[in-house]
Image (cartoon, rainbow, N blue to C red; front, top):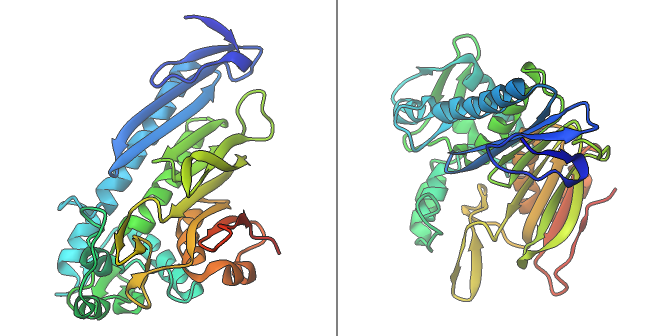
Length: 328
């Protein structure tokens, strides 16, 4: 094994690198295709075997969450709820039930701009299988009749979930990666890791502790949404997450307008006025979920309602193409 100084250490997937003059001597990076994207786990550890085990455990935790939340797997717990909850109550695990309770609270606090029942709208706009297409207004209205977090009944005593109308569908797209990253961080801590970095497709990220020789934290670049080859801003994560939602992820053109996959559940149409939002927060579930309401509601609403321990970087679709931090 080649011995390198920390400042010159290279990051190679699946390979441990020995660092000199560092209490966390080994660097390990592993990745795997999960949830339709690539999850990357990077750790620094004093013991190589412990670091490799921790990285593998973190990825296995992401796979477990995928088995619970995937709407592409017919045997996932979420898919079973979607298939049966309109017929009668479906008992779910305590973990899924608690997550749905949290989602309802997010919906209430965001004025309905985050809604885990947005699935029918995503489907009618074609964002499940491709980059999307323009539906008929009648299709949008039909889908809206099955959208609304208040159409999901949660029984705390029995951990049962029931849909009030047929056609309701829970969509994990706004929560899955963020929740999986948080669970992977817990797995790292459980294995004794205090320096690590987890990325779910590059859009849901958590920096645990700090990397060697960089007390500021893990550097993460925010892309310029109009030219994703350029960096708009750099943020350092130290026990914090960063999630980004942007029109450049999935979109299509129709009649001279760009329609993105970020749906306003209140209107049934893609949100307009903002191009991208990046949110830094204490948990990745928080940053991933709140990126949608901030995107939909815009700068003024974000300025009024964002918590003080959140940092929000917002790019607006105006003549000046303004990108800046939302400051109180």
